[in-house]
Amino acid sequence: MGLTSLEIAPLIDDLVLVIDSQDQVLYASEMGQSLGLISATQVARPEITALIDRAREGHTVKNDLVELRRPLPARGIVALGISIAVLPDGSCFFVGRDLTAAQRLEQVRRDFVANISHELKTPVGALSVLMEAVVEAGDDVAAVSKFVNRMQTELVRLNNMVRDLIDLSRVQSDDPLASPTAVPMDRVVSEAVESVQFAAEGRGITIGTTGDQGAFVAGDEMQLVAALRNLLTNAISYSSDNTQVSVGVRIHENEVDITVADQGIGISRVNQERIFERFYRVDQARSRATGGTGLGLAIVKNVCMNHGGEVSVWSVVGEGSTFTLRFPLFKPAPPTPETDFEQVSSIRPTESKGRFSS
Ligand code: ADP
Image (cartoon, rainbow, N blue to C red; front, side):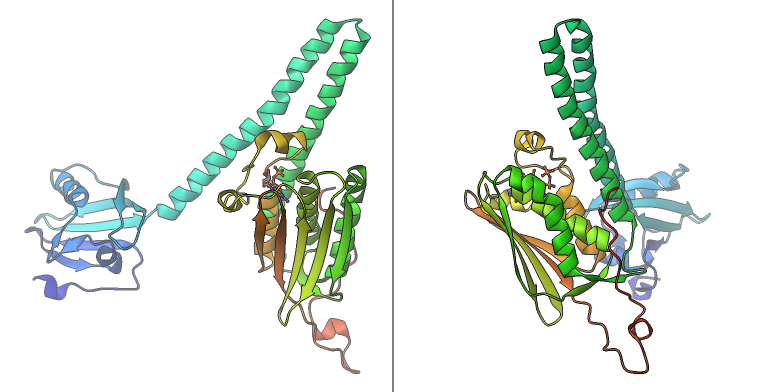
């Protein structure tokens, strides 16, 4: 039998090859084709033929990891866990499981854990050094007071980090659309603005609110408030004193946009592509000085994804930034005399739940 019997079976997601004792490919699943493993009637990739030879020599080939470059024009590497069974006549049954996504996830998890350890170690390390300094300072009241002040700063940092880690883990695991409520965006805006008002006033920054009223979004009010609060906190942190921050709401046919615009330091184009990554900061020192954790925008992005929305940024260095949250608009069916609001929609207006992190 030659390649004429080679079938493409789209139902099989894994890589499956049947190869006879003369190295002729009798069967290849779709992945074998798309990865360019087969040329004419034979396996064309040396990494794969080497494994087949090993199996034929009597070695166990079970879940062996092989990384293959995808053929052009596709890009990237595909990771396969390969197992080969050799039949008595030398023909082979070959299975490759695509482990690319699992491997990427594992890498992200490892990086995240490494980042958290580093981020937590910094304030904890500083605290233990400061503790020793306090003990050594003994009766020197001025020195003790200086060290205690610095301990307070580190504690705030630690507290912010733990708070943001909890928020991030919640928004990553919760699915607000599984049991959504109709959240009034007017209230989301006023709650978020109110929560940062004190910090803004301390810096002489005024927060103005403009735009449309009456928008509803299906989802979780605490998450939506947290997202907007994070944007406002950043707008204040990365702006000079006595500037302005404005929150705008714009209702479109099927979506609502909430923008937060500042007159702050701005973000370069290269950095705009990275700021939504966990722990990414443009200026580490400035972020630390303002109690930043590098998690605020990652939380915002997750909240948007959870609500079927998106976040985008427009910015010019030295002029300012505008972040836009876009959510699908929730439009409740108008209640009829026979049916009240609860009956026409399983989504009900929420009661205010206060802050996200309690
Ligand atoms: P952080 O806790 O450091 O503020 P975020 O995830 O909220 O972390 O933001 C990531 C980085 O993006 C910040 O460290 C800062 O460099 C940049 N950034 C975010 N918002 C703004 C803004 N409004 N103006 C300028 N830079 C910003």
